[in-house]
Length: 357
Image 1: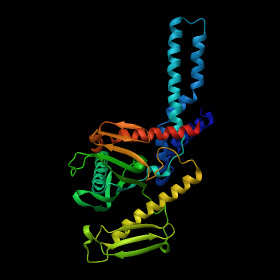
Image 2: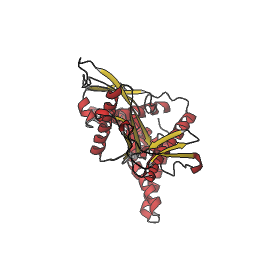
Image 3: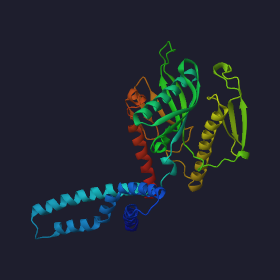
Image 4: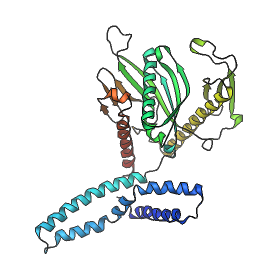
């Protein structure tokens, strides 16, 4: 049960924001902040009011049921209405609890996604390429902006590594559960005996950090420049345009050589570095808040096997929530990606709610 005081505070805050926004005496920056908060509260305000009035409505219906002067038909209608009222109150309570859960400040940020071929040789690099194409298709369908920051190709159209920036509304909140080991089971084109091979790719999703989130001191950086090289090590540039940035305090190293300009490579490298440092700081903060990091979902552990893509059986299975979708082809086309994300989000919210109970 949610304390009435908390619900009353939500309703009062909504009323105060309404007054502030309609007053006209507010600067643009504050107006934008309060508008966002007001919009968020709008999604829950009706449930909050109904939840606060639940006991009164319940008592009124119970009196109708218990009143000996009322006929059978009125009592039956009151019983049906009471049953529905109780069900609706349970739904409202859950929605309000979800709203009151601590917000992840990073949820509203854009995301940096890093995909790397894992065990499995050439087949792993082909699967890494397939995963990236899937995220590209999802981005296109959702009208997100996807920009490749860095890409390293292998033979036969595979990818050793790709790093991309995905921009849109609340991107990190939608993609953060993708971090981990993605395993594929299929018969490679080069397999003559028809045997199923298993290989893997790792995905890391980081919130895109802005300069205000992470301050990087120039003295904490070691920057090395070198000539870009393509597949097989051949030189693709006659100048030292490639950049390797080492963040001395954390030991994080980022190399960037996709651009012909050293300045542009440095900019891209710093963007990746900033996001990796930001994520490292977030992990430290999470561990300090709670020693219990054994939640099945959202740990962001890149070594955790989270999903299996079984092509012979046409299924994709998420091991954290034991969800199997027998629509692998549609999933790889980005068609039912939302179904998986919604299931993961709901399960993660359930885990958080259980901690409150």
